[in-house]
Amino acid sequence: MPAQIRYDLGFGTERQVTRMGTPGCSVALLHAIGKSPSPRLPPSEITNFSLTKSRFDRILREVVSIGHFGVFTIFTILLAVAPGPARAEPLTLATADTEPFANDAGTGFYDLVVAEAFARAGHQVRTVRRPSDRSLADAVSGALDGEYARISGLDEQHPSLVRVPVPLGTFRFTAFVREGGPPVDSWDDLARLHVGFIDGWVILEENVTRYASLTRVADEALLFGLLVRERVDVVLYELRRGLRLIERGHLTGIRAQPRPLAERPMYLYLHRRNAGLVAAVAGALESMQTDGTVSRLQAQAFAPGVAE
Image (cartoon, rainbow, N blue to C red; front, side, top):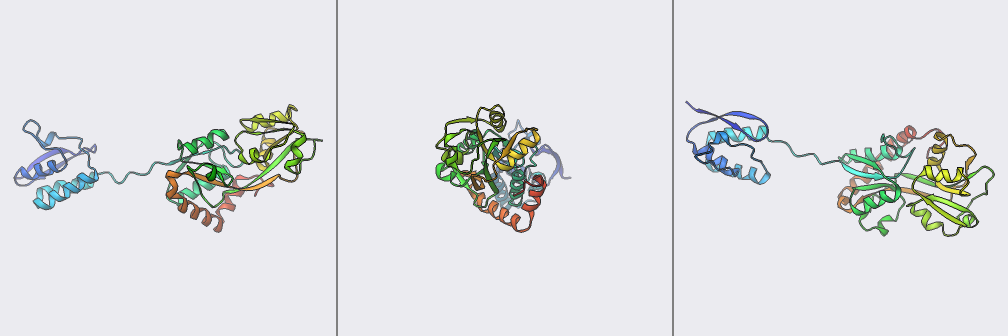
């Protein structure tokens, strides 16, 4: 009568397997996986072996060379209980954006667009919120997998970044002043004013070169606080983000200038180790624009009157 041997296959599951014939069949299999039995350690006590691809191939060669039913029985069970391919870990992206483009719940416009684009490309992402300068630094260093949303050209300044060429949306860089404050229609109008903006906004750092004084702060709450307390004459910010902050903060006496100082398409950047994903994500973004997904997500995230 065939012997019944209890094997712990090392995947948290035990199976009763039938060994038909000589012990050499099971010994050959155990040798193939790198666990040759000894007189003091019978096969039934061998546990916790790992089934890597190389060992899997060795098992297959042993099975073919031996050609015995007992080994095929064990081999079949190994196939049944072996775990499938490991799922790739989600990519971690950084953003410094705020409402209505990004939020902690992941329901901002860019949050939704990025998550859908990666899902169509077969990947999951998680987003962490960072101050603007740290968000960029973590992407550049490779501490995180990428960052959104930034103007074009960052890959020229930071070779470790690769730009996904399809824009996520458009930023309207706008001057906000107190009621009765001076008009600001161009960068040159800032030359006689006390100006504030958020540290790390590259387009502002490049264009704001003449001013009476300049104050850089870490976030939008501090920025608009400067204006409310009359520490500056004007703050520079994105139009829809500023309108949302004024609405939610119940700020009064502050208005956006009617004409943005600049409008720029905004992009997702990936660290160069993820360069192989750029084409798939870009293709997903293009399909989302074509099939109406971007417009739907825009309507979902933006309040009436502040859409693209």
